[in-house]
Length: 338
Image 1: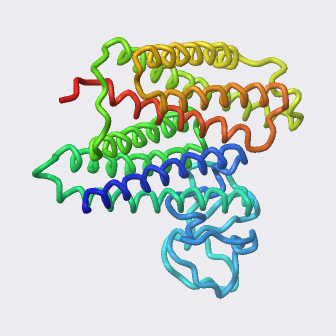
Image 2: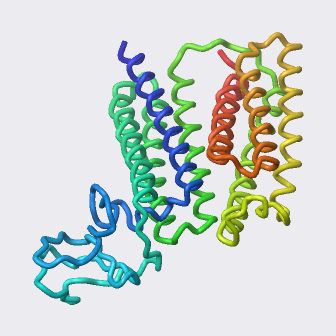
Image 3: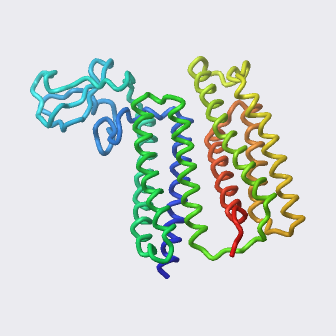
């Protein structure tokens, strides 16, 4: 019973991590990454302000340390200490926020980013609960405890990466690392669920093992190049709000990403065929194939349909779902089962 509870908590943790990824992609799509210009608070508040007037200096106001104000619409200032303001602003109580020059309050962006962080915090709590529950299995299955510890450390590292992303005003390479770290956490949780459950044993098959590893590598390459394509689109968005112009002169990453998807597709079609000939359980590879088809369909829709709403975050989210299915399926073939 206790192990079943641990598996349930692990599954909830996995769902929450995927929700964080989905929320993060929505943040990227809406341009809400700097909705909260600091971290872990939002404008120095645990609950972000509802309107810009809350970020303007007020006389006879109680300010807490690190709370922010926007001064003359040009600069963010943070409170040095807890204090109550006088009639006029005393800059001795404030320090300019120097980590970046982003000075914009958009309530929609702020709350989208805040909800993203809130889901991340809940996911962190559940992974910590996983670690606490895993301690009971140290003697019988040390892997459960060790990997649970790695997951918690990974969540902490991911939170730190999130801080770096905000401090750098959304540096592209840091966003990519942030995305890859999320996939590492997904893989660890999937592995711990796999390791904790009774499972069907497949005959050891060296060929399919390497084929699956190859397909996972292809997916990771697609994710990385996809983030670069997204960065290109973001730049085009800044240049023009006309979606029809965004892909008039695409860069090399776009062509590579589009063409490479065919290699991903045919590799997994062959995996489906090979699994069928060996009479393996086809459920997971069928799901993998379905996700790939939907991914390609979304890619076509985005290209010819000028990026319909939610198509970009859904495209990224499905890529992470694809990775999860592939990694889970690979675990059945990575070693000989006893």
